[in-house]
Image 1 (cartoon, helix red, strand yellow):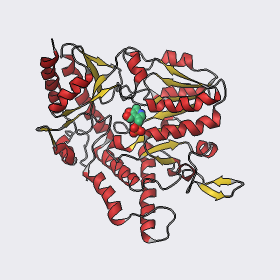
Image 2 (image 1 turned 90 degrees about the horizontal axis):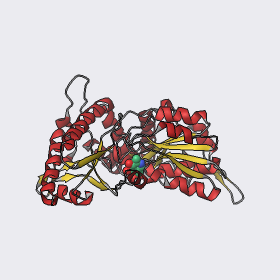
Image 3 (image 1 turned 180 degrees about the vertical axis):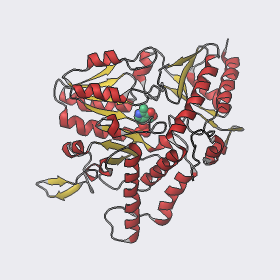
Image 4 (image 1 turned 90 degrees about the vertical axis):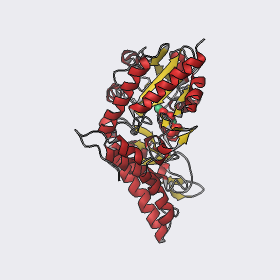
Length: 415
Ligand code: PLP
């Protein structure tokens, strides 16, 4: 059972931490302080149990079998699809395609939508803060047809420059693809506004929701976008499973993704017809237990309450920004008005990788590097940052350990 955070009562972080056995691990003689949630989050017992239960009681290949285990596995798989449809505010489970994660979801959207609409001279408009998985797939589909990929700039505060974005939108813009929450800066983009602006130009809109799913309620229908991608492993679910949501009419219109079993209606050597969505986009044997774990993660998150999670993470992040702001020579990148659970920073006297290694010796796990956002690093003229990213189980005491670790590192690195 997940502990619920009832409005008005204190956020039950201690009880939540008990649900995550890995948080009791000792690393190099210290209790782990896991501040790398934007890369991947840890899993509660309910998710571990749900996955194990599939293999103990209900595992077989899905859809094709007539025996009991196949029926059980199919029922669990399809129930998980309905659960995820509700989690993201989709009207229909048929709009939920199970994919490996956000990367696969964005590749599917780029390939299928791109082949459907992009022609020579067309433009795909992105932003400077995109993850590589929302850049490279568009380049791969645009290049061969002579379409261009453009990026709207980011301000010094790490926000999307909406005036520049508006100026780049034109009748040539066929697709806009934007990140909902930046993994490198924490910036929350005004997706609803972006969708409205893009739709006025008749463009399709794809949203990378990898970092949004663990922190904010997602209502895809209200956002008005055409596709929305997320990863299970970032929202306390298993790795190797995610969701690409697509508008039904569009899923029917675009070509399929991979060819193979399950995605067909009838195969002949002269002509094949395809199954309706979502099967049309799920060729082959899928990850069978993954969706069940993902649905359990959605239950867990909603059990705690996404509003309560967001409020708690805001407290932890603002505390981190305040404490880190006092460290001499430390510069935080990204000061957006709307920000999620990420603090990215550089230190004058230490390379991010060296700092990350010293912190690891203190049991504090952070990420260092370009965070798969090299164009954004170029924008801020840094090769890499240190990123502390928070989840629903993190505490201000762990932030204190981060700061103490940085101060100890400065003793070593400062000339
Ligand atoms: N988009 C963003 C904003 C991300 O943070 C990530 C992962 O870090 C991805 C896309 C890719 O997600 P995945 O590796 O789960 O496919």
